[in-house]
Image (tube, rainbow, N blue to C red; front, side, top):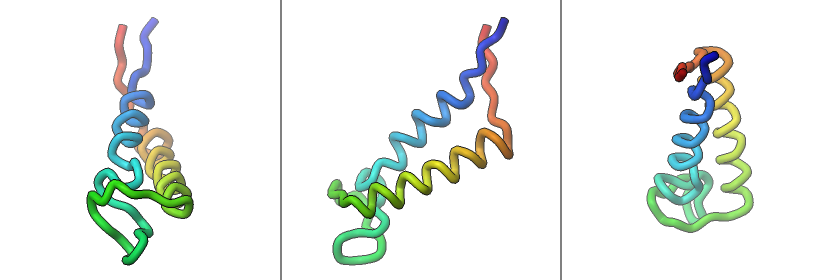
Length: 70
């Protein structure tokens, strides 16, 4: 019996990279996009959550990222 670690690895990596304010924030406080400002807002969290869901769905369902262990 093997375990599929692909969805877990993709989810953790994307959670770290798509945290609002870490690499970029969309929308920002004064502009449309800012890089590395470490601030966040409610609308920014919503936009990043939608981006996270869309990219995760494409990677796992459409492309089929799989890492087999076991």
